[in-house]
Length: 583
Ligand code: 5AD
Ligand code: SF4
Image 1: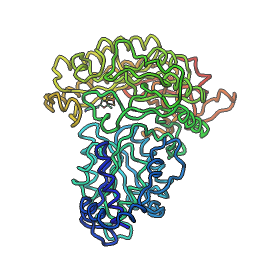
Image 2 (image 1 turned 90 degrees about the vertical axis):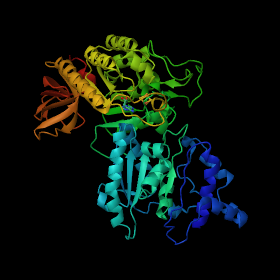
Image 3 (image 1 turned 180 degrees about the vertical axis):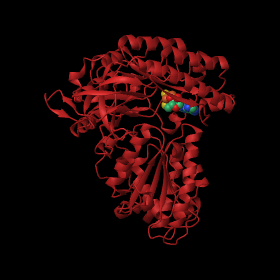
Image 4 (image 1 turned 30 degrees about the horizontal axis):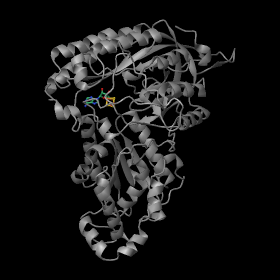
């Protein structure tokens, strides 16, 4: 049976390789568990074709099998047929314990839950104890060199663990999932022979099969990117029952092609999840008592669900004034404003946030909605990346400094009191001292409440890699980064000072990490608020005094601030609807 499996997989490699990167590498020098040696795929193909072609054909995948796998994920039956070359038993997790470790962005946290949901359905158990794991899966990030270095270091540590288990009844299997698997593909398998499986961001449904192949001592990989995979029907498993907030993935991939960014290459083309399935997930979370939902995607506000037929199919996306795209205008489909409107109506006591947006996609209808709806947080992430129009052009961001600043003013006029945050890159290709000072001046001018600042890291495959020179020395990048961080902190402290004396609505998360007598929560702008855990009045139960619990909304009078945290004292427990009257 084993050689047949190799043949089938080797055959699949040929035609698909020209379309995309489905990599199935099944033959390892140390051979399969049953002791059969596995010749090269090419040799097997030759032998196989000559020998019992018709019997193998009968046992292989049928035309119906391929048709079924081409179905829309929504229409796929809950229980899929196993691939014809693996038995149901081989595909089952058989209670093997999986240890999942997540690196990088919030999208990866969400992907970890998707991967777990797929494996759980397949009969795997989850463990939080590395020592008892049968399978270790790392959900990886490629955005900067440092992120990948962390994974290589981790793999080194895991090597020792795997060697110890070589003679055990169930050998340890190690998998690399996500962006790094997608970016490096077989390079990982060649460099680290101890890695058993690779699964790109669009291949998590395939995990049971990849693990089944790995079970026989072979390496297996699926790094095929999809044009339509959104995992719409895979509900992530809510792992922490006491959680007050959840992330809901609404779209995947990115079409923007900023010149420095690897994301379009690791996560593929932009595609949106159908509105109906997003609303269903938000409703479920509301029924579970969750109080905050963050809509998640690489470009949330470019959302465009074209899964249903619409009458206004000729309408193209409204961009922010002065902004352009690197792609042709997209027409038709349900847009972000529509989604935000419907999501915010699900539960008026549920806070809605979204991340990460692109500044180009903030038409007035989105800003108006954020202003009008009490439960849409007045908080916008507006990644500028640089304050220099020259650098922005080299980055292919589709806007100038002037257009960006104008948008900031327009947002502040449309949503009074809005909290703004941004991402910046220090030391991009060709960035001069003058360009850097322009970024410093943008930080001063906008006075962000939160910031995420990075030193530029050249990534292969990107436009910058092919066309530009990574010519800012490392020490200069780091010095400029330090300067940006200092200025950001100064300005954020000033911006946050404006809240002192104000009463703010805070969603309680739990105990403060630093003090057992304090509680911690988040205000509307997503800043951390710390306050003493004391008894207070419950406004909906007058006369009753209680202590705040995770998931409660409380009013906190702010007494002091830093660049990252606010402190205050709690006034009362309230509801989101009753709390509109505060400064
Ligand atoms: N180097 C440094 N920072 C980067 N980012 C994206 N690509 C790179 C890179 N090559 C930053 C951008 C983006 C954030 C998620 O990561 O600021 O908004
Ligand atoms: Fe990367 Fe630009 Fe897409 Fe953001 S918008 S994921 S920075 S390419």
